[in-house]
View 1 (cartoon, rainbow, N blue to C red):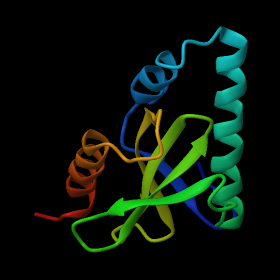
View 2: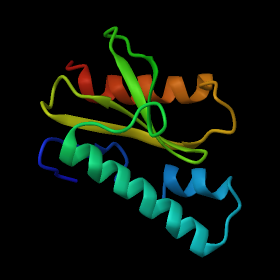
View 3: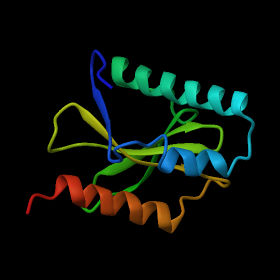
View 4: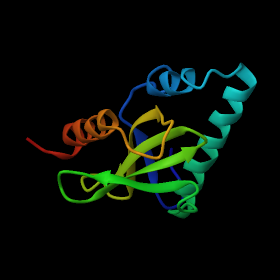
Length: 126
């Protein structure tokens, strides 16, 4: 997704069949509700791409620390999170690690490890 200010990319080739599908399945919604949540997430990501910011902490939170001591973030729609970081390698780009269902305010160790693993795969040049 290209906006006026930023570009937003996914690690996954097809997140709708990957982590998005897994996250939304945990919410146990009908197709209409799922479509509304998807539309809200896309609208927030487009707003981020176009303006470079989202209303914090309602829609955009600092979540954890990456190995380079910078933070990664979560775009929120209800209990669904898009975990992402601002790339050092690809200027002006946020990279979405994955989507997750988050039933509490606390970041899970599994989500943190997945973000770090994906960050290493993209940002650490061998």
